[in-house]
Length: 447
Image (cartoon, rainbow, N blue to C red; front, side):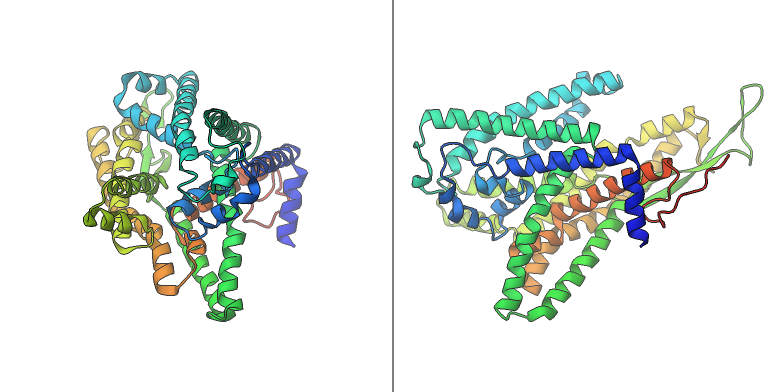
């Protein structure tokens, strides 16, 4: 009853209700577009092609992020990933390019220019990925009969334009959700694409266990319990912070600062996993390279490398994958958590960490603490990233269903769900309702 009362309170807030309905409407448009096959391709011939991605390999991973659009050869086949790639490139370039550093300091106007640069870079990436995707369709299993008008230059040009337009439209949908809807639009599009594959993957696992008598309902129950535990662990990883106590000096009547026990005491929250899912995305991008390079050679050693790095559930793949995640966690944390800037801002605002001098000593302390908490955070992140391999090898879970037991898919779903709930929660609290984790009753306004 408390849950339904909370939903009623959410519905009673007109602005929040309109934002949720708009978000659901735009997501429906995105899911509809994922089913629209490119002109010139026979949809009936794609059944066997789509089946190639049910084994959870690298192709299955790409298909999961696009919600099945990759296997459907749809207008949204590239999904929103080119925009994510462009955002990562621009973010890394802000470290080395003075012009981007200057834009970053200009506030809202600079942010708009950086977004515009990201959009143009997205188009450039799409112009490379779209022809590669079209050219690779026959190699990935699309029969020649599926190409109604043949693989002519006109087909490649028109389909490339459609694929680029599809990605730009998906990017526009994400930005509209962020501006007019609820939650981070780009992240929600990725999450919806991942969740779209969940029912089919679970149905295949259920059929394997129950219908084929491979463990029965008891194994399904055990798998669901393990899945629940992994979700809880992922939530802990996303939410965990180390609180650094901060004392603020009280401003006196003369305008100066007086450091005493009556100053405001607050905390600097340093996240255990400050880099989010970015180390996994970086590592996965690198893991595609050995297999692609090895495919250029016919030697026995090259074929062995290709075999090992094409199996995302294999031993060597996951050893190298976890090592790269740990390295990239330190790298991305170092460039996204500016401890020197944090120390300077703290000093300007009249704050200090008890027992530590403001300025350089504070920056050194924050940097040391970040290094200490990043190590267990990176190990935890690497473990969750490679847990699908344990699920496949030790428990015998179907590979498609195992992708939801960790890695980028699960962390994205958890992170987006928490972020969206926090935004809804803020609307409830601002309208004098208890939050989502409360009873949902009206809160008394304080006169």
